[in-house]
Length: 166
Image (cartoon, rainbow, N blue to C red; front, side, top):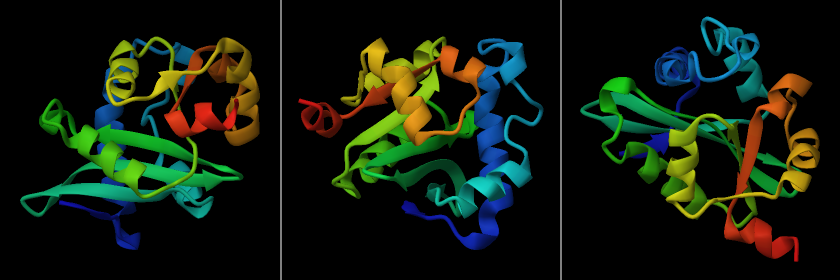
């Protein structure tokens, strides 16, 4: 079942993010990795900045989360993670499809360039890499990421975004 995450679930959201993010350890630059990957205080800041989390609940347990944040004229998919014990069962795809149905805005996703599994996941669901000439301007306009992270990141977009740029 997909549902809005509750105000009192930030701790479990953080646990899911940090569990799922273990896949990035050793893949992204060491300077970009922290332990935990997302400290609780940072998660609280993200929620306060307008990231709204949806969760996938199975047998009464939250096992996947995906955030969306409306920034200016786009929707950003943020912090999409599934517990490692529940991965490869379609949960992330269902969350992304649900999230995409909830907005008419062009949608962007930022992720790590070397996370080939994440790129495949989004590309298999209709998102496409934006041209390199747009990447940094988009990361600067819609996200707050340090220069090193911009260097090793990519941006993917849905058809609505591509249609809005032509």
